[in-house]
Length: 175
Ligand code: GDP
Ligand code: MG
Image 1 (tube, protein in one colour):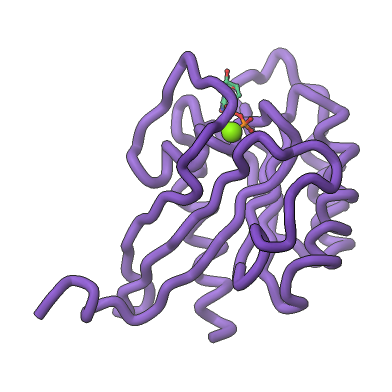
Image 2: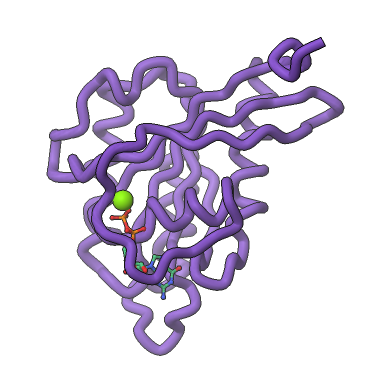
């Protein structure tokens, strides 16, 4: 029996948010438990995968990364097609990246399936002294919009695993 035959579900998840908020590093942390200090803006690879178990079901998470098209409205609808979940990332040290979150939600509402499960992520939580976005602001936004929320650090790994699991469990609860 091949490994492929054991997979119960494939969940497509898209990672979105402004440039340089840490999307690619969050993905590297989750799929390879790795962090790359000199990461250039993403070129090439469209998605990474990680196979895990939820409620004894084998789930292959296929996580898509933008290839530097984070400019407003440059991400195409093909990117969102078939996505069951989204990681919407901002940088807790860059107020503008949080101010743009509402636009990214609009993008999702316009291009993705209505039932898409969204996890709002405040990344770079390790940079405590540079914080520009209070946690409460994000909690309030997430509650109003019906999003999950977590603060993460791709650098030290804090909450990355739990955020992905929460998102994937949310998707699993809908299939
Ligand atoms: P992307 O454009 O959203 O994919 O962002 P990258 O993943 O390429 O990260 C942009 C920059 O932020 C890089 O210099 C990373 O090393 C840095 N970075 C990413 N995540 C973190 C984090 O959690 N903490 C800190 N301190 N830096 C991070
Ligand atoms: Mg990137």
